[in-house]
Length: 375
Figure 1 (cartoon, rainbow, N blue to C red):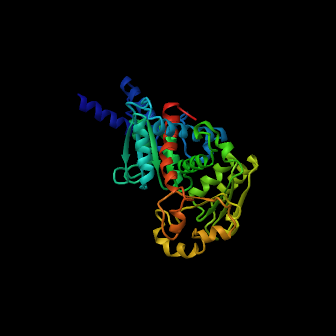
Figure 2 (cartoon, rainbow, N blue to C red; figure 1 turned 90 degrees about the vertical axis):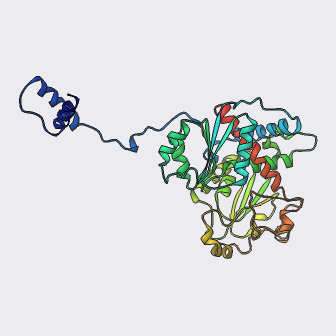
């Protein structure tokens, strides 16, 4: 009997019987339903709203930025100076680390941060989960976010993290995309805040808007995601920025325009140059990064040639007229063509303090989004 009903239903969707019976009327109703049946696609999957994320540097207001830096300093003081536990606010919680691109500092920083907060960090590398390859980004976001409490995503194109956030039911932190690297710049600012906090004061009790105001940072290198994030964030704490990039390797023009608006609003300076001498003049801090990011290996020969004269040396810094007490930062890993040993390993270099602070700033972001539920 069940087989007969199944067959009748199939026939009904193909053609309606002519006899005007009760059975026929039900068949006609089925036919009308079949004619108006909707074909669904991924476009019909609703976006998730109301979930706080950290996707770009624009997501933080000046106050939120300053608060996060101070919070990171507070966690560092609490753990390293006072030796106090966190109280495990993430006990029983899991954070997924979805890394399309490998990273020593980001992985170690995030895993130890989650552990300090009492949670569990689940690492999902490129061999475990290939974003958008074996499964769509939409499907991955729906599945993973249904089982964890937060996601740290290190991706390629920025559009990938935007798609993940669109459908995620839990907070997502951008651990790197091709356009932005917000957590790295938080560590940079925390490091500078510590360095410029006056003796007798404590970084966790002092606002970075007072320690960093009117400091000048010079960027010498590629117009990449690190520079984008620096341009957007520095004005919020009152810092000036000058940059020197080779012709053809300038920052994204749309992000540059936003950074210029941020600078105008904050009353800070933003200088764009091609000559490292122009950028370094009067600088308190000199920063560079890799010239060849992951995925650009085939361009190495071309890029090394284009960046001739951009290698950070003591001679370049001093002849360009940097401040006498200049400091150096680099987000690592460092390559020999980018900066000489006499700068990188000198007392003026604070790259390892900067690397450690990845942990404390990431910890502060996780605490803010997963424990406090927003910035």
